[in-house]
Length: 418
Ligand code: C5P
Image: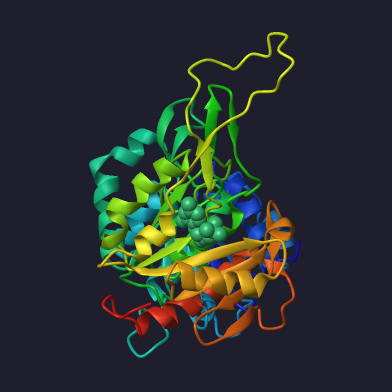
């Protein structure tokens, strides 16, 4: 798979305050660096009780800042040097005490000072502050902590998490720091342009499963990866996303509402009523065209029969065509997974389903893969995505597609004909 470097060219400050979750920050730092970021680590005294500055120095490839009175800084102002030109300050873990200090605007340690000194955007490029809290569940639910969090958010911080589960103290509840992958996803989202801000997107993904009997069914090889990548890219772009997913084992992208379905009929019933409330509908699901006309209540047995059973099939509803035919339809994007004559088949679907845009891809080359290549087909033109036609990873393609769709959506009104 082609490597993505989502944070290439980004300069980040990663702050650690004291907490056992500091052990996860080493992994987080590794991911940030792998994603291409230049990371400057700041640690409080408490954080250095849990993990050493040497570990973070080795992983970031830079000295770790720990004190306000750092003589190594030529101007003696590490808090200014660290924040000017930074793309974001991320505090992970953010302890209850650290959040209390933030809420009060205190500045007696370097990390608090860095947060206070970061430009808010008045005459300066704003530097977003993201907090990944980590603490015991009682500390988390305490009114003082909640009050401090609300104050920090009101002052412009973005709160990430927290997760629910086992805690280092042996208790179970809210207060775990998000996993490193989840924090990376949230950070990438925070730094992404928002061409779909205020838009609502509905998307179908994955295969459908059409039951024959209680243990068997008709399905296909769609993995759902392209649709899930588009859902994630749309959320990064600021959309409110609802993902109607067939049976796949994929994690839901963060911040996306997921509705699980199995059959085409269930997918149809989940999609149709809510489609008009959305600005954009993207149909990536590989919906089975046919389903067994009747469902056997019990497993169909061989029982020594010499003749194989035959099944009558009924046609499934065409979800995309039904949405595109609604009087108050959203902007509809179809997918065409073909094994040959991609452009010709995609264009036929564009006309048959009356769509403004269809995205073609070669089914056997994409199903289950991490890489893909797309062909954008509309009434006027056909063009590959990426422009050079070379395969790229599905999230990179999804981001390019979302950028393209956002542009088209801006010039489109509901009443306009497809
Ligand atoms: O009709 P066909 O399967 O060739 O078209 C593919 C496009 O139509 C995809 O966008 C797919 O999600 C959508 N589709 C649908 N409901 C069906 C069949 C296909 O929404 N029953």
